[in-house]
Amino acid sequence: MKSKSDVLIDVKNLKKYFPIRAGMFGRVVGQVKAVDDISFQIKRGTTMGLVGESGCGKTTVGKTLLRLYDKTDGEVYFGNQEIFELDKKELRNQRHRIQIIFQDPYSSLSPRMPVGEIIGEAVREHGLVPENRFDEYITKIMLACGLQEYHKDRYPHEFSGGQRQRICIARAIALSPDFVVCDEPVSALDVSIQAQIINLLSDLQDEFGLTYLFISHDLSVVEHISDTVGVMYLGSLVEFADKREIFSNPLHPYTKALFSAVPMPDPTVKMDRIVLEGSIPSPANPPKGCKFHTRCAECMDICSKEAPKVSDINGHKVACHKYG
Image (cartoon, rainbow, N blue to C red; front, side, top):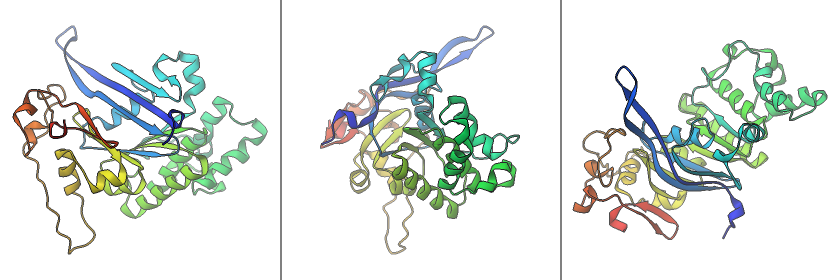
């Protein structure tokens, strides 16, 4: 069993609510519970996949972990440090160790800067390498990410979508991070290019000892790259387990429905598709009890009255009254 020191990211009861304002004076009339009391750990050198429907709060989790958003409540430990207790100077010193790769490689790159400057700007700002080794270092990072040295003087509009995402990855990796949030990094790319980028991320993880939070709605991609998987629904983490365990034995009714929608490459295999009834409730006004009970085929009386506690079944965590 791994020790506590092997845990790089430790999230405890994290909440992130966004205020709903109305009226002339912008009075707060409600809260959007984007992330509602979730807990998980990511071990060093591993990848946690975070899946769920659009709007369930996946990206908000990633941005809150990086302190791009302030938390509403809870704790986020990066190593032994609580990220939200760092002052501005301490956060700046740690900033290069936690990076993000955004979903859209088109809008996340400055069109007015050449690629070499895009990748090297933050490296120079943080003083990570001496000036006399700067050019050589940027070249090394570019080559590791499948780019060529002559690409340094070119601009983003001269590259394809896959190459632009390689530039975004190189920009993050150049800062020697320990932890990288990959926010749907392949969803904007052609399927043929997606595999190349996923394999690149895996190779870079092995080479640089990186730890990933991989946010995606594509379960086949998550199954390929992840070590552990968390399933989110309406701001809550409903299931968390080792990848093999959760794909072979999903416990939560929502996870079962999600996994039943994954297309199978073998046409002879017939999947029992679970179709969810109704629409996703509003995160500003979630249902009482279990948030999923309004769409759940296995709903019991207690589900509409009481929120389920997380049950730990040999390391497989699930928030459902069936296992309480």
